Length: 212
Image (tube, rainbow, N blue to C red; front, side, top):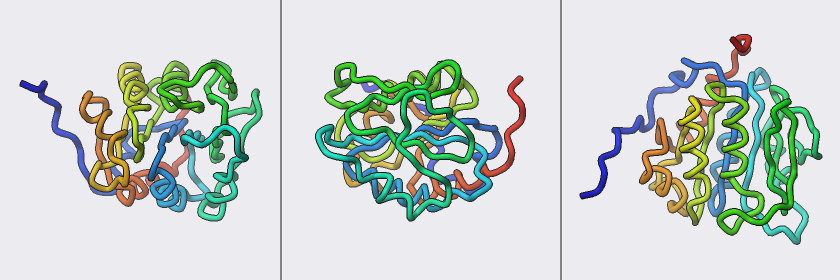
């Protein structure tokens, strides 16, 4: 018999995400994830109080088009960071092709050309796990559409260290394997469509409380 999984929050009413203050939102996606990212980024207000870091699976041997393609949908500044870039509220950092993007303990960006993880560099798991170690319960991790299981282990680590994990509803994903892998492992706090995720993220626009 398959192990039972706790009943997920699915498409909750907007505003419930604001019950906790987050300092960093990490987002991972692959095939089909760009469509969902367009919806999420368009919802972020200028007052958004968290930093955002994004990993998508892109070929390493071609220049990234992501920042150019997504920037017109987002009012927040968006860039591909260099190593050592500070992670600050109200800014969106997109992993460069061919590099793992990680969070350093001093809340700056690290970039690595270490071997691919689950056939991917950048890897969603690498970002999620490094961010969880630093931000703990002030971290929100979001896993979008994709065709492999990258991100499922990362979401488990996020939850183990007190953070919050959202997965895209598989029936709203053009490639449902990635969110389905996380859901199958119980590595989620809520399962949302991109439209509901966007409304929830917009509710995080208040100023964060100081770290305890």
